[in-house]
Amino acid sequence: LLAGYLGYVGLGAAVLQALERPAEVQTAQHLLQAHLELLANHTCLQGPALQRLIEGIIQAYKSGITLQGNTTSLGRWDYSGSFFFSISAITTIGYGNLSPSTAVGRIFCIVFALFGIPLNLVLLNEIGQLMLLGVQHCACRLEEMFHWPNKASFLMKTCALVTGLLLFLLLPPLLFSDKEGWSYEEGFYYSFITLSTIGFGDYVIGMNPDRTYPGWYKNVISLWILFGMAWLALVIKFCINLLE
Image (cartoon, rainbow, N blue to C red; front, side, top):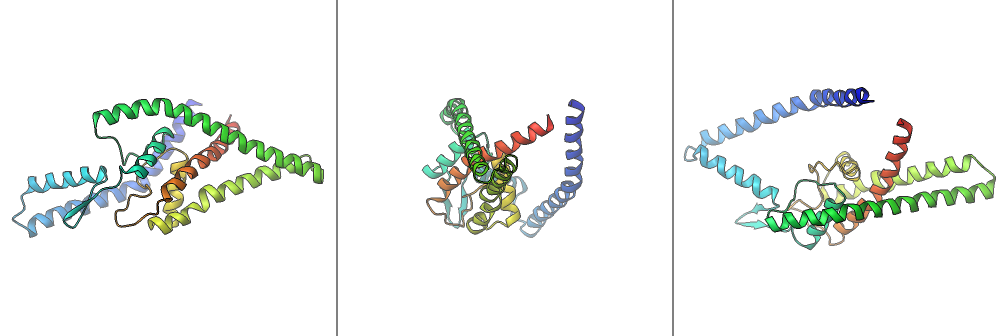
């Protein structure tokens, strides 16, 4: 089992290296070329000073602050943004694009997650059990109505799988395309990375300073995360049973 696990991870690493390494090298070359051209065309710029400015911009962007003309945009730590961060913390998604910067905030985050993660797991387990009970109840009703002892269970499990795919993976990218300007592929990628709690942080909702988001947006996405994680956990549990 360990050999199979390492072989699977090694295969994934080899494929990802072949797919992503050329793009990484090309991006690095373009960045270096743009940096050198900027210094050559604007001789008044000092290399170290420009480097410090770039580092400051990167750090500010990670904190959610962007330049808009002569002003800066704030908003990641308003109540809506803080609520979404709390959800991402206790669900262990941890996008990484936002994190506490004060010592007190970090200590509170540790305590908050210490009790919040078990609470979240209990809630997800209850939601998953309710979903299973609903599927089993519908299967029993079909079996009573049409006398399909084996087909009813298979039919309801298939319907539950298709319904979950639509609600949590296939339809949400359409909303993200409208609100975030992402392509359908990017929205589908974000949906799976979020609900599986991988949470790379390369795509996060509500972070584009050039877009205006409705007040209900992040709250609806928070509910989608809770129920979507419960559904995907059942699917992953089924896959675990198959592997075992």
